[in-house]
Length: 471
Image 1 (cartoon, one colour):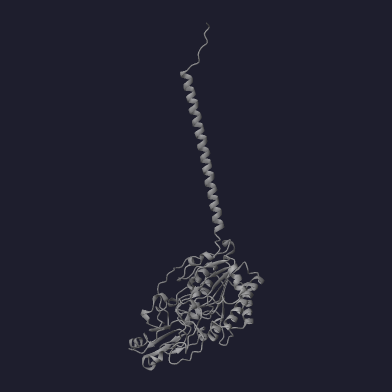
Image 2 (image 1 turned 120 degrees about the vertical axis):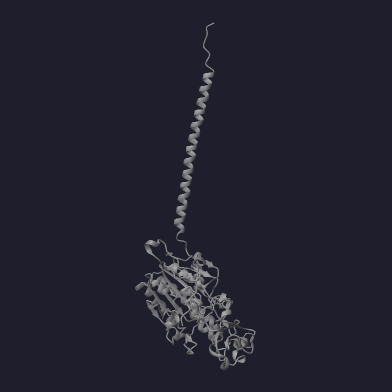
Protein backbone atom coordinates (compact mmCIF):
# COMPACT_ATOMS: atom_id res chain seq x y z
CA UNK A 1 0.00 0.00 0.00
CA UNK A 2 1.29 3.46 -0.84
CA UNK A 3 1.63 6.06 1.87
CA UNK A 4 -0.65 9.10 1.92
CA UNK A 5 1.24 12.26 1.05
CA UNK A 6 0.80 15.50 2.98
CA UNK A 7 2.52 18.87 3.10
CA UNK A 8 5.77 18.97 5.05
CA UNK A 9 7.26 21.70 7.13
CA UNK A 10 10.60 22.31 5.49
CA UNK A 11 11.15 22.87 1.78
CA UNK A 12 14.40 22.09 -0.02
CA UNK A 13 17.27 24.44 0.66
CA UNK A 14 20.95 24.45 -0.20
CA UNK A 15 23.26 22.83 2.31
CA UNK A 16 26.84 23.89 1.67
CA UNK A 17 29.79 21.79 2.83
CA UNK A 18 30.82 22.46 6.39
CA UNK A 19 34.55 21.97 5.88
CA UNK A 20 37.19 24.68 5.57
CA UNK A 21 38.12 26.01 2.13
CA UNK A 22 34.94 24.49 0.80
CA UNK A 23 35.41 25.42 -2.84
CA UNK A 24 38.81 23.74 -2.90
CA UNK A 25 38.28 20.57 -0.87
CA UNK A 26 34.53 20.00 -0.82
CA UNK A 27 32.75 18.31 2.04
CA UNK A 28 34.15 15.70 4.39
CA UNK A 29 32.99 12.10 4.52
CA UNK A 30 30.28 10.97 6.95
CA UNK A 31 29.68 7.80 8.96
CA UNK A 32 26.33 7.31 10.72
CA UNK A 33 26.45 4.59 13.39
CA UNK A 34 23.32 3.30 15.13
CA UNK A 35 23.32 1.08 18.21
CA UNK A 36 19.75 -0.24 18.39
CA UNK A 37 17.92 0.36 21.66
CA UNK A 38 20.61 2.47 23.34
CA UNK A 39 18.66 4.37 26.01
CA UNK A 40 19.84 7.91 26.67
CA UNK A 41 21.26 7.14 30.13
CA UNK A 42 22.73 3.66 29.58
CA UNK A 43 26.27 5.02 29.94
CA UNK A 44 25.61 6.66 33.29
CA UNK A 45 25.86 3.56 35.49
CA UNK A 46 28.70 1.92 33.54
CA UNK A 47 32.34 2.83 33.09
CA UNK A 48 32.54 4.04 29.46
CA UNK A 49 35.93 5.72 29.01
CA UNK A 50 35.69 5.92 25.22
CA UNK A 51 32.26 7.52 25.19
CA UNK A 52 33.41 9.88 27.93
CA UNK A 53 36.39 10.89 25.81
CA UNK A 54 34.09 11.64 22.88
CA UNK A 55 32.24 14.15 25.05
CA UNK A 56 35.49 16.11 25.36
CA UNK A 57 36.48 15.64 21.74
CA UNK A 58 33.09 16.22 20.14
CA UNK A 59 29.39 16.82 20.69
CA UNK A 60 26.94 15.22 23.09
CA UNK A 61 23.20 15.89 23.19
CA UNK A 62 21.58 15.45 26.58
CA UNK A 63 19.20 13.09 24.76
CA UNK A 64 17.17 12.90 21.57
CA UNK A 65 13.50 12.07 21.15
CA UNK A 66 12.66 9.39 18.58
CA UNK A 67 9.40 9.52 16.62
CA UNK A 68 6.30 7.66 17.66
CA UNK A 69 5.99 4.72 17.24
CA UNK A 70 9.27 3.95 19.04
CA UNK A 71 10.24 0.96 16.90
CA UNK A 72 13.39 0.08 14.97
CA UNK A 73 12.44 0.41 11.30
CA UNK A 74 10.09 3.42 11.56
CA UNK A 75 12.56 5.35 13.71
CA UNK A 76 15.60 4.55 11.58
CA UNK A 77 13.75 5.62 8.47
CA UNK A 78 12.88 8.93 10.11
CA UNK A 79 16.60 9.51 10.75
CA UNK A 80 17.57 8.77 7.15
CA UNK A 81 14.71 10.81 5.62
CA UNK A 82 14.01 13.56 8.15
CA UNK A 83 10.31 12.80 7.86
CA UNK A 84 7.68 11.92 10.44
CA UNK A 85 6.43 8.35 10.27
CA UNK A 86 3.03 9.34 8.88
CA UNK A 87 4.90 10.98 5.98
CA UNK A 88 7.41 8.29 5.09
CA UNK A 89 4.94 5.43 5.55
CA UNK A 90 7.14 2.86 7.30
CA UNK A 91 4.68 2.65 10.18
CA UNK A 92 5.79 -0.64 11.76
CA UNK A 93 8.66 -3.13 11.91
CA UNK A 94 6.43 -5.68 10.23
CA UNK A 95 5.16 -5.38 6.70
CA UNK A 96 1.50 -6.42 6.67
CA UNK A 97 -1.60 -6.50 4.50
CA UNK A 98 -4.98 -6.33 6.28
CA UNK A 99 -6.75 -7.61 3.18
CA UNK A 100 -4.71 -10.77 2.65
CA UNK A 101 -4.05 -11.02 6.44
CA UNK A 102 -0.37 -11.52 5.64
CA UNK A 103 2.39 -10.43 8.05
CA UNK A 104 6.14 -10.51 7.45
CA UNK A 105 8.82 -10.72 10.12
CA UNK A 106 11.11 -7.79 10.87
CA UNK A 107 14.02 -9.43 9.04
CA UNK A 108 11.89 -10.44 6.05
CA UNK A 109 10.55 -6.88 5.79
CA UNK A 110 14.08 -5.55 5.25
CA UNK A 111 14.03 -6.87 1.68
CA UNK A 112 10.51 -5.68 0.80
CA UNK A 113 10.88 -2.62 -1.41
CA UNK A 114 7.09 -2.16 -1.45
CA UNK A 115 7.17 -1.45 2.31
CA UNK A 116 9.92 1.17 2.12
CA UNK A 117 9.48 2.90 -1.22
CA UNK A 118 6.58 5.28 -0.62
CA UNK A 119 7.77 8.32 -2.55
CA UNK A 120 10.16 9.59 0.13
CA UNK A 121 13.84 9.34 -0.79
CA UNK A 122 16.32 8.35 1.93
CA UNK A 123 19.61 10.18 2.17
CA UNK A 124 21.57 7.46 0.37
CA UNK A 125 19.64 8.05 -2.86
CA UNK A 126 19.54 11.84 -2.55
CA UNK A 127 23.31 11.90 -2.01
CA UNK A 128 23.93 9.55 -4.94
CA UNK A 129 21.83 11.75 -7.20
CA UNK A 130 24.19 14.61 -6.32
CA UNK A 131 27.39 12.74 -7.10
CA UNK A 132 28.13 11.07 -3.76
CA UNK A 133 28.99 7.41 -3.24
CA UNK A 134 26.99 5.75 -0.44
CA UNK A 135 26.64 2.44 1.38
CA UNK A 136 24.41 0.79 3.97
CA UNK A 137 25.78 -1.81 6.37
CA UNK A 138 22.77 -3.57 7.95
CA UNK A 139 20.90 -0.26 8.32
CA UNK A 140 17.10 -0.65 8.10
CA UNK A 141 15.81 0.30 4.66
CA UNK A 142 19.17 -0.05 2.97
CA UNK A 143 18.14 -3.21 1.15
CA UNK A 144 15.22 -1.63 -0.72
CA UNK A 145 15.18 0.28 -4.00
CA UNK A 146 13.69 3.74 -4.29
CA UNK A 147 12.08 4.76 -7.58
CA UNK A 148 14.04 1.88 -9.05
CA UNK A 149 17.37 3.04 -7.62
CA UNK A 150 19.42 0.98 -5.19
CA UNK A 151 22.00 2.10 -2.66
CA UNK A 152 25.47 1.89 -4.24
CA UNK A 153 26.46 -0.86 -1.82
CA UNK A 154 24.24 -2.55 0.72
CA UNK A 155 24.53 -5.42 3.18
CA UNK A 156 21.30 -6.69 4.76
CA UNK A 157 21.30 -8.72 7.97
CA UNK A 158 20.73 -12.44 7.53
CA UNK A 159 17.92 -14.10 9.46
CA UNK A 160 20.43 -15.78 11.81
CA UNK A 161 22.82 -12.86 12.15
CA UNK A 162 24.52 -12.79 15.58
CA UNK A 163 23.87 -9.41 17.15
CA UNK A 164 26.47 -9.42 19.93
CA UNK A 165 29.63 -10.87 18.35
CA UNK A 166 32.31 -8.33 19.29
CA UNK A 167 34.82 -9.70 16.82
CA UNK A 168 32.34 -9.24 14.01
CA UNK A 169 31.60 -5.70 15.21
CA UNK A 170 35.27 -4.82 14.73
CA UNK A 171 35.46 -6.58 11.38
CA UNK A 172 32.50 -4.48 10.22
CA UNK A 173 34.37 -1.31 11.21
CA UNK A 174 37.46 -2.48 9.32
CA UNK A 175 35.33 -3.10 6.24
CA UNK A 176 33.72 0.33 6.45
CA UNK A 177 37.13 1.99 6.83
CA UNK A 178 38.30 0.27 3.65
CA UNK A 179 35.20 1.52 1.83
CA UNK A 180 36.13 5.06 2.77
CA UNK A 181 39.86 4.80 2.03
CA UNK A 182 40.19 2.31 -0.83
CA UNK A 183 36.88 2.89 -2.65
CA UNK A 184 36.25 6.53 -1.79
CA UNK A 185 32.76 6.21 -0.35
CA UNK A 186 31.33 9.49 0.91
CA UNK A 187 28.51 8.34 3.21
CA UNK A 188 28.06 5.05 5.06
CA UNK A 189 25.42 3.94 7.57
CA UNK A 190 26.46 1.22 10.02
CA UNK A 191 23.90 -0.57 12.22
CA UNK A 192 24.34 -2.78 15.29
CA UNK A 193 21.48 -4.78 16.82
CA UNK A 194 22.65 -4.22 20.39
CA UNK A 195 22.00 -3.24 23.14
CA UNK A 196 18.40 -3.81 21.96
CA UNK A 197 18.48 -7.61 22.05
CA UNK A 198 19.97 -7.80 25.54
CA UNK A 199 17.51 -5.16 26.71
CA UNK A 200 14.63 -7.30 25.45
CA UNK A 201 15.85 -10.65 26.74
CA UNK A 202 17.34 -9.64 30.08
CA UNK A 203 15.86 -6.22 30.83
CA UNK A 204 17.37 -2.72 30.87
CA UNK A 205 18.20 -2.68 34.57
CA UNK A 206 20.42 -5.77 34.61
CA UNK A 207 24.10 -6.62 34.73
CA UNK A 208 23.77 -8.16 31.25
CA UNK A 209 22.76 -4.78 29.87
CA UNK A 210 25.74 -3.14 31.59
CA UNK A 211 28.04 -5.73 30.02
CA UNK A 212 26.80 -5.03 26.50
CA UNK A 213 27.22 -1.28 27.06
CA UNK A 214 30.85 -1.91 27.99
CA UNK A 215 31.16 -3.82 24.72
CA UNK A 216 29.63 -0.91 22.83
CA UNK A 217 32.13 1.42 24.49
CA UNK A 218 35.06 -0.80 23.51
CA UNK A 219 33.75 -0.84 19.96
CA UNK A 220 33.58 2.96 19.88
CA UNK A 221 37.19 3.02 21.10
CA UNK A 222 38.12 0.63 18.30
CA UNK A 223 36.32 2.88 15.81
CA UNK A 224 38.30 5.93 16.94
CA UNK A 225 41.57 3.99 16.63
CA UNK A 226 40.59 2.71 13.18
CA UNK A 227 39.84 6.25 11.99
CA UNK A 228 43.30 7.39 13.07
CA UNK A 229 44.94 4.28 11.63
CA UNK A 230 43.38 4.95 8.23
CA UNK A 231 44.30 8.67 8.32
CA UNK A 232 40.65 9.71 8.30
CA UNK A 233 40.69 11.89 11.40
CA UNK A 234 40.66 15.12 9.39
CA UNK A 235 38.34 13.82 6.67
CA UNK A 236 35.57 11.86 8.40
CA UNK A 237 32.68 13.10 10.53
CA UNK A 238 30.95 10.52 12.73
CA UNK A 239 27.45 10.56 14.22
CA UNK A 240 26.54 7.90 16.79
CA UNK A 241 22.87 7.55 17.68
CA UNK A 242 20.02 5.09 18.18
CA UNK A 243 16.37 4.50 17.35
CA UNK A 244 14.66 4.27 20.75
CA UNK A 245 15.19 3.47 24.41
CA UNK A 246 13.99 0.58 26.55
CA UNK A 247 11.89 0.09 29.66
CA UNK A 248 11.20 -2.83 31.99
CA UNK A 249 8.07 -4.82 31.15
CA UNK A 250 5.57 -4.91 34.01
CA UNK A 251 4.18 -8.37 34.74
CA UNK A 252 2.15 -10.34 37.24
CA UNK A 253 1.98 -10.48 40.18
CA UNK A 254 3.16 -6.85 40.46
CA UNK A 255 0.55 -5.54 38.01
CA UNK A 256 -2.51 -6.61 36.06
CA UNK A 257 -1.24 -7.12 32.54
CA UNK A 258 -3.14 -5.90 29.47
CA UNK A 259 -4.94 -8.77 27.74
CA UNK A 260 -7.47 -7.62 25.16
CA UNK A 261 -9.30 -10.96 24.97
CA UNK A 262 -10.60 -10.26 28.48
CA UNK A 263 -12.66 -7.40 27.01
CA UNK A 264 -13.48 -8.40 23.42
CA UNK A 265 -14.21 -11.55 21.44
CA UNK A 266 -11.78 -11.40 18.55
CA UNK A 267 -13.76 -13.74 16.27
CA UNK A 268 -16.81 -11.47 16.49
CA UNK A 269 -15.22 -8.03 16.28
CA UNK A 270 -11.84 -8.12 14.55
CA UNK A 271 -10.78 -8.80 10.98
CA UNK A 272 -7.03 -8.20 11.38
CA UNK A 273 -4.62 -7.04 14.07
CA UNK A 274 -1.00 -6.22 14.80
CA UNK A 275 -0.72 -7.00 18.51
CA UNK A 276 1.64 -8.85 20.87
CA UNK A 277 4.50 -6.62 19.70
CA UNK A 278 5.44 -4.51 22.70
CA UNK A 279 3.61 -1.43 23.84
CA UNK A 280 1.74 -0.62 20.62
CA UNK A 281 -0.88 -2.29 18.43
CA UNK A 282 -3.51 -1.75 15.74
CA UNK A 283 -6.77 -3.45 14.84
CA UNK A 284 -9.01 -3.58 11.77
CA UNK A 285 -12.58 -4.26 12.94
CA UNK A 286 -15.02 -6.38 11.02
CA UNK A 287 -17.42 -4.33 8.85
CA UNK A 288 -19.84 -2.37 11.03
CA UNK A 289 -18.04 -3.32 14.24
CA UNK A 290 -15.70 -0.36 14.74
CA UNK A 291 -17.79 1.50 17.29
CA UNK A 292 -18.56 -1.63 19.27
CA UNK A 293 -14.89 -2.57 19.35
CA UNK A 294 -13.85 0.93 20.36
CA UNK A 295 -16.41 1.16 23.16
CA UNK A 296 -15.40 -2.25 24.50
CA UNK A 297 -11.73 -1.28 24.75
CA UNK A 298 -11.59 2.44 25.52
CA UNK A 299 -12.01 2.08 29.31
CA UNK A 300 -11.03 -1.56 29.59
CA UNK A 301 -7.71 -1.14 31.41
CA UNK A 302 -6.43 1.87 33.39
CA UNK A 303 -3.05 1.69 31.59
CA UNK A 304 -4.37 1.18 28.06
CA UNK A 305 -4.86 4.07 25.61
CA UNK A 306 -7.40 3.43 22.83
CA UNK A 307 -8.09 5.72 19.86
CA UNK A 308 -9.91 5.77 16.60
CA UNK A 309 -7.48 6.61 13.82
CA UNK A 310 -9.00 10.03 13.16
CA UNK A 311 -8.81 10.93 16.86
CA UNK A 312 -5.22 9.86 17.46
CA UNK A 313 -3.17 12.73 19.01
CA UNK A 314 -1.67 14.84 16.23
CA UNK A 315 1.54 15.56 18.13
CA UNK A 316 2.62 11.98 17.43
CA UNK A 317 2.68 12.69 13.67
CA UNK A 318 1.69 9.09 13.11
CA UNK A 319 -1.94 8.39 12.18
CA UNK A 320 -2.35 10.39 8.96
CA UNK A 321 -1.25 7.58 6.71
CA UNK A 322 -3.47 5.14 4.85
CA UNK A 323 -1.53 2.15 6.20
CA UNK A 324 -2.56 2.93 9.78
CA UNK A 325 -5.44 0.70 10.88
CA UNK A 326 -8.77 2.09 12.21
CA UNK A 327 -8.16 1.35 15.92
CA UNK A 328 -4.86 2.17 17.66
CA UNK A 329 -3.87 1.03 21.15
CA UNK A 330 -0.81 1.57 23.29
CA UNK A 331 0.07 0.92 26.90
CA UNK A 332 1.56 3.15 29.53
CA UNK A 333 5.33 2.61 29.86
CA UNK A 334 6.02 -1.03 30.75
CA UNK A 335 2.54 -2.31 29.88
CA UNK A 336 2.74 -4.54 26.81
CA UNK A 337 -0.40 -4.90 24.69
CA UNK A 338 -1.31 -8.60 24.57
CA UNK A 339 -4.06 -9.87 22.27
CA UNK A 340 -5.58 -13.30 22.72
CA UNK A 341 -3.01 -14.81 25.10
CA UNK A 342 -0.06 -13.67 27.19
CA UNK A 343 2.93 -15.41 25.70
CA UNK A 344 5.20 -12.42 25.59
CA UNK A 345 8.51 -13.30 27.25
CA UNK A 346 10.51 -10.09 26.84
CA UNK A 347 11.72 -8.48 30.04
CA UNK A 348 12.34 -5.13 28.39
CA UNK A 349 10.49 -3.37 25.60
CA UNK A 350 9.72 -0.21 23.64
CA UNK A 351 6.96 1.07 21.36
CA UNK A 352 5.64 3.34 24.10
CA UNK A 353 5.01 7.08 24.17
CA UNK A 354 8.10 8.84 22.82
CA UNK A 355 7.80 11.51 25.53
CA UNK A 356 8.56 8.94 28.23
CA UNK A 357 12.19 9.30 29.31
CA UNK A 358 12.85 5.58 28.96
CA UNK A 359 12.19 5.94 25.21
CA UNK A 360 14.79 8.71 24.75
CA UNK A 361 18.07 7.82 23.14
CA UNK A 362 21.63 9.02 22.47
CA UNK A 363 23.45 11.41 20.18
CA UNK A 364 27.22 11.75 19.93
CA UNK A 365 29.22 13.33 17.11
CA UNK A 366 32.86 14.07 16.38
CA UNK A 367 35.08 14.91 13.45
CA UNK A 368 36.59 17.89 11.65
CA UNK A 369 33.31 19.81 11.34
CA UNK A 370 32.09 19.36 14.92
CA UNK A 371 32.96 21.49 17.91
CA UNK A 372 34.75 19.93 20.86
CA UNK A 373 33.38 19.60 24.38
CA UNK A 374 29.97 20.84 23.23
CA UNK A 375 26.78 19.85 25.09
CA UNK A 376 23.66 20.23 22.96
CA UNK A 377 20.13 20.65 24.21
CA UNK A 378 17.71 17.73 23.65
CA UNK A 379 16.18 17.56 20.17
CA UNK A 380 14.00 15.35 17.96
CA UNK A 381 15.70 12.79 15.74
CA UNK A 382 14.13 14.31 12.60
CA UNK A 383 16.74 17.08 12.86
CA UNK A 384 19.62 14.65 12.20
CA UNK A 385 18.74 14.53 8.49
CA UNK A 386 19.35 18.21 7.64
CA UNK A 387 22.52 18.06 9.74
CA UNK A 388 23.80 15.17 7.61
CA UNK A 389 22.91 17.08 4.44
CA UNK A 390 24.94 20.02 5.70
CA UNK A 391 27.92 17.80 6.47
CA UNK A 392 27.77 16.15 3.04
CA UNK A 393 27.17 19.40 1.23
CA UNK A 394 24.02 18.29 -0.57
CA UNK A 395 20.57 19.72 -1.16
CA UNK A 396 18.02 17.84 0.97
CA UNK A 397 14.63 16.54 -0.01
CA UNK A 398 11.59 18.15 1.69
CA UNK A 399 11.75 17.19 5.36
CA UNK A 400 10.35 17.98 8.80
CA UNK A 401 13.70 18.79 10.36
CA UNK A 402 15.57 22.06 10.77
CA UNK A 403 19.29 22.73 10.51
CA UNK A 404 18.83 25.59 12.98
CA UNK A 405 18.44 23.00 15.76
CA UNK A 406 21.91 21.51 15.24
CA UNK A 407 23.82 24.33 13.54
CA UNK A 408 25.50 25.49 16.74
CA UNK A 409 27.27 22.15 17.24
CA UNK A 410 29.22 22.73 14.04
CA UNK A 411 32.42 24.73 13.72
CA UNK A 412 31.47 28.04 12.13
CA UNK A 413 33.97 27.94 9.27
CA UNK A 414 32.76 31.25 7.93
CA UNK A 415 33.71 32.99 11.19
CA UNK A 416 37.42 33.59 10.43
CA UNK A 417 36.56 35.24 7.11
CA UNK A 418 33.85 37.26 8.80
CA UNK A 419 36.28 38.42 11.46
CA UNK A 420 38.80 39.52 8.83
CA UNK A 421 36.14 41.42 6.93
CA UNK A 422 34.88 43.00 10.13
CA UNK A 423 38.37 44.01 11.16
CA UNK A 424 39.06 45.42 7.71
CA UNK A 425 35.83 47.38 7.83
CA UNK A 426 36.61 48.78 11.28
CA UNK A 427 40.16 49.73 10.26
CA UNK A 428 38.87 51.37 7.09
CA UNK A 429 36.28 53.27 9.09
CA UNK A 430 38.94 54.42 11.55
CA UNK A 431 41.21 55.49 8.68
CA UNK A 432 38.40 57.45 7.06
CA UNK A 433 37.61 59.09 10.38
CA UNK A 434 41.26 60.02 10.90
CA UNK A 435 41.45 61.50 7.41
CA UNK A 436 38.27 63.47 8.01
CA UNK A 437 39.61 64.69 11.36
CA UNK A 438 42.89 65.67 9.69
CA UNK A 439 41.13 67.50 6.85
CA UNK A 440 38.80 69.19 9.32
CA UNK A 441 41.71 70.16 11.54
CA UNK A 442 43.77 71.55 8.64
CA UNK A 443 40.78 73.42 7.25
CA UNK A 444 39.95 74.84 10.66
CA UNK A 445 43.56 75.89 11.24
CA UNK A 446 43.71 77.55 7.81
CA UNK A 447 40.46 79.40 8.41
CA UNK A 448 41.59 80.55 11.82
CA UNK A 449 44.92 81.74 10.37
CA UNK A 450 43.09 83.68 7.67
CA UNK A 451 40.82 85.24 10.26
CA UNK A 452 43.82 86.34 12.35
CA UNK A 453 45.60 87.76 9.31
CA UNK A 454 42.49 89.69 8.26
CA UNK A 455 42.01 91.01 11.79
CA UNK A 456 45.63 92.13 12.02
CA UNK A 457 45.39 93.84 8.64
CA UNK A 458 42.25 95.66 9.76
CA UNK A 459 43.98 96.88 12.92
CA UNK A 460 46.96 98.06 10.96
CA UNK A 461 44.77 100.09 8.62
CA UNK A 462 42.80 101.83 11.38
CA UNK A 463 45.85 102.54 13.54
CA UNK A 464 48.68 103.76 11.28
CA UNK A 465 52.09 104.11 12.90
CA UNK A 466 53.03 107.62 14.31
CA UNK A 467 55.47 109.69 12.12
CA UNK A 468 58.59 111.07 13.80
CA UNK A 469 58.57 114.96 14.23
CA UNK A 470 61.57 116.99 14.99
CA UNK A 471 60.94 119.36 17.87
